[in-house]
Length: 613
Ligand code: ARG
Image 1 (cartoon, rainbow, N blue to C red):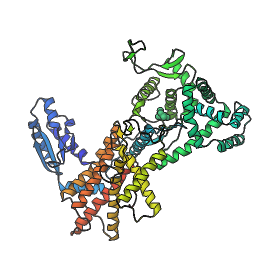
Image 2 (cartoon, rainbow, N blue to C red):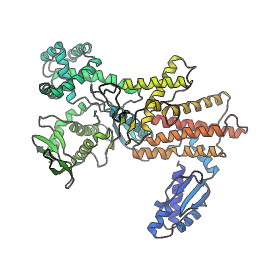
Image 3 (tube, protein in one colour):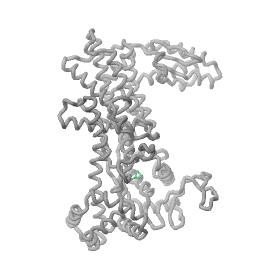
Image 4 (cartoon, rainbow, N blue to C red):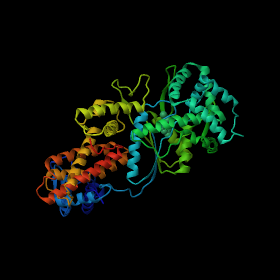
């Protein structure tokens, strides 16, 4: 089943070919003058250039061919050789029927599905989240859903930050504060020999009462601040990190406790945001692969000594950038920077973990593609990791892709924060959005007849939709300003507007069902029926673009246009009020199909509409 754009492109390609020209010129797009045409093809201009012929003359030839196409009501040449097409009402109706009968509302499945791993959110144990994590969660969730919907086999992994220096910091801070735990650490053996699971569970039960999530939230920022000033403290934390990574048993138990406590809390918060992972692996999971990987990199001759550290050079010969030295002089250095694999202290670094994680993923899932939905600020990091992975043969060229994005900023133009001190609490953010949503609902007189629980649920959905849609409607590379008043408005290009329209269609359809009305074959007569059908047809194109560009904004845009299109259709074309039963049935089908597609699109954005409001 093809969308009109695709099938008309095929027809145009054949027409160009018949004129002795490359079929590639037959690309058809939606018209940018909907008052004049439904679709257009500009290929005659490019074809004329390459064949050194007159564009109009080519257009005449192509149009002659296309005129025979029964689906086209008119094919005309505009200007110097643009080809404008109008689709016949019958062809539009046939397409609408097809979409109406399709469970996927007109969206095709990929011919060659792949295994794709989406690495997104990337929260850390104890270390507070920032907007980068929020956007990564929202965008990554949407990309995961989109890829899966189109037929890829997809795994979404949270890639939990559970292995770095912050773990040593926390261990140090907890031991400093709690003499009992410090003493326990001294008592425990270095390795878990002679230590049963039951013994370990007993120790962990001690932690449970003594170190809570609130403790972690409180201890981490203080420890991080102290480590910045206090060299002795920093060294202790480094030592604790190294001991943990080298397997010190007591630390491992304590660490596991931190990981569990924060994971439970984080998963709950993500879930409230409609973000759910298939896999919750941590950086630590790649740890056992690091030592053999380092040996292998060495064997491959990729590891180079550099001032006591070991690095992989990733720049190609001649790839350099200018670097300013402290004395003011400027030198040329290789670019990208080498990947630091083993620090001079012998620790594995962030990039080391990422490289080893590629190996881990290859063993477990063997993805064709790994998408890293991570803040644009980490672009250099990924460039280094990817290049090193390609050099080592850990991934096929192109099999790793960084899906970067800009920031959500506060009114001050800096990355948004919910609390003094820069802590972004997902929980607070959602609560802020929910509170605003309650206000907005009351203002608009919505949800008044709902039970208190149902009202709360609706407010939650409206709040989450507001946050997510505000993010996803922008191309991901664009930064935007956090403005909850605008995000939560029921008017304009917002999540709440989309939910409102969705609920409205649902209520129209409920009424129709109550009256026993039935859908039927689509008839395209009124301009609004035509426009709505063309919109329904455009779903496939929007999904394709979003997929290829890894950019959910194309889905968001489609959902918005569809909601608007339905609104115009409903204003112009009464459904139950139509006199002709065939027209009534047709319009009902159009409304049902619009709803199905709108809900699918919203789901791809990670947004859920309530039944009523
Ligand atoms: N935890 C990291 C951070 O907070 C993000 C992880 C992103 N994913 C990755 N594979 N490096 O910056």
